[in-house]
Length: 337
Image (cartoon, rainbow, N blue to C red; front, side, top):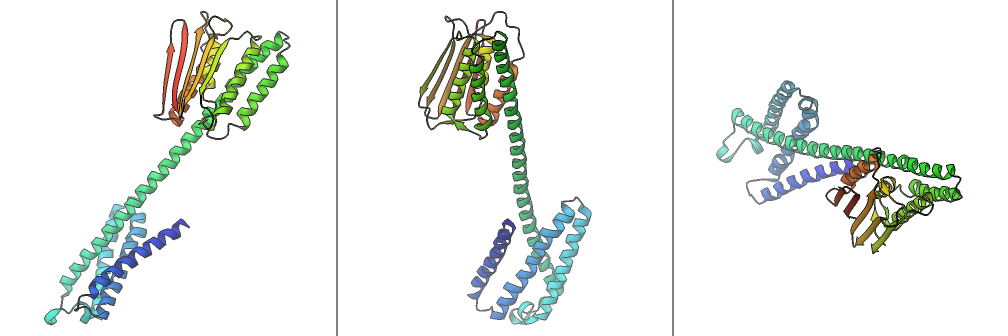
């Protein structure tokens, strides 16, 4: 369909050009109807055939394949052959082409030189069109390849989230089961709700912010079960969150790290979590007190993941500030949704 549309565009352009030249020449009394048909119909068709010979055959077969010697030879041969052909047509319609005022006749040399310039002009036009089309085509191909690469990278980053999250959650549930806690079934149920969201509702590029925040709340509830309802977190959501969307699973890594590496069981130093939405701007703030004996350095996967996803999905539309201080660890993220 696209190729057919291109053909229609090419034909329309040439018909319009020939019609315009014929219309202009009609006002000149020295041009008869026969002159118009020969000079503004027959010769343009010959030149257009040279245009497409160069566009469709010579450039792809020789120039694009870097067979420069053959290309130059082919162009020279085409110019000579077309020049001789045009002169043959001129002899057939001598009175309309070669004979001018006062019965002056154009000689072979002068006429052939004119055909050379005309051929070079149409060769130049076809080369400009070919290189322009190829440039835009290559740009589109490069964009498509880049988009495919980014999509593959995003899919890989997203695929890392589930195992990483599942690994941490199963560790928590294992601790409950090991302690024979009565909250183990509730924790498993909460985990199943979380996994259902991750598996079935996170397949789109963006999800409703309301659902994402509910997912975060479910994760926090799971952590509270793990700590025997002795996990202290000050979680606040402010602003209008309805009708807003966000890339799924973008904020969970910050909360995971706060529970994994921070102090969550001290009511005097709770994990502070604030999400504030102002029109299309989201401000995320989380702060936790650090464990003094924390030696676990394996939790960097999630943060590196989310930083890369932010670069890919919100380029130039976010600001991430991470402050790793002596006693506290703070993350602030400003995001244009």
